[in-house]
Image 1 (cartoon, rainbow, N blue to C red):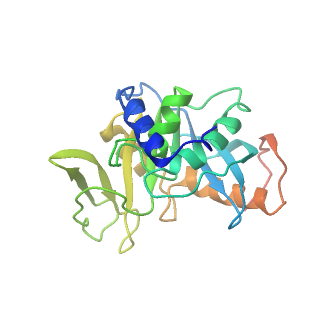
Image 2 (cartoon, rainbow, N blue to C red; image 1 turned 135 degrees about the vertical axis):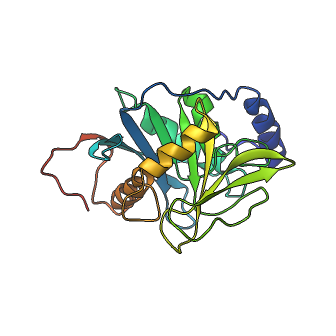
Image 3 (cartoon, rainbow, N blue to C red; image 1 turned 30 degrees about the vertical axis):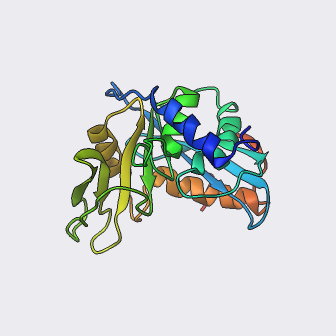
Length: 232
């Protein structure tokens, strides 16, 4: 999908995509998805999953798995070009779309407002939130070391996201709106997704499932989860 793009092409495309960004409150959230990618070092095969959970109970209901071949190189700021094609392939397997998708990466907390969550959100026409494990962009002041402490992350006076402590005395995560939701709603949703771990449940469970897929424990396709099934 993007293998023929140079980084110059990719930059221009991000600037054009960003013109389509919209931020609006989601009226009701009953289902939430987590999206993640896994791959073996030096491999061109992307293993992708989207998992769907109830909200706010965080009960896993279903997940979809697919692979995608890409030669687009990894470079900070261009993650969408490597991961979004695989995620769109998985997205096609899901009949009943979730109300919002959380991606392991940034939304508009990005130099061109086009992190992987914004990139996917626009192409899928889907509400998305980015929750990244490290800071890509913006001026950050670390929040207090208490759970749910937050600080705004700004660039040139504009709020692009939040640093959020999800546990006492642990490194923060970085939350930003992707598309079709607001910054404040994104932050509140992620807070409601925190369980016993630093990473919110949608992307944590997606991470575990996609690694099982990559290592051959799970097969491609759409899977309903029975109440008595224990995956991890």
